[in-house]
Each structure stands twice: as structure tokens, then as C-alpha cells.
Amino acid sequence: MNFYYWLGYHLSRVLAQLFFRFRIINRERVIQTGPVILAMNHQSFFDPPLAGNACDRPIFFLAKK
Image (cartoon, rainbow, N blue to C red; front, side):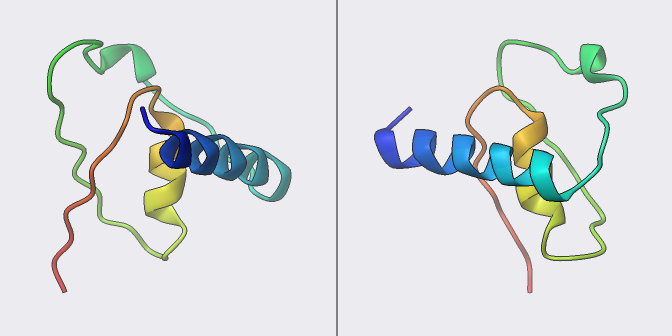
């Protein structure tokens, strides 16, 4: 994990805990090794960063306009 990703991850995690109240449900169902696809139907621009905070490993986003 490079420095900028690490810094952004931890900074957004702190901000998310300060300003948003969210909980993670069924985290244990996500496999811990190997690739995973997180498919979301998000309602705002805050949802992808919050989803990134819910994961403990690097995430790469793919979006369709």
C-alpha cells in the first residue's frame, strides 16, 4: 500500500467516524484472501468512500457514467 493511499484511507476513516453513523453488516462473509467484487447501488457520492472504509484491504474503483 503506497503512502498516499494509506494516508487517504486513514484520513477518510477518521472523518467517516466523526461525521457519519454507519454500521457494517455481515463483514465475516467477505473472503479474506483473493479478489472480491463489491457491487453497490449507491445513493450519494459519499457511498463509495464509506464502502472503502468498510474494507481492510486496498480497493480499486470502476464506475460507469
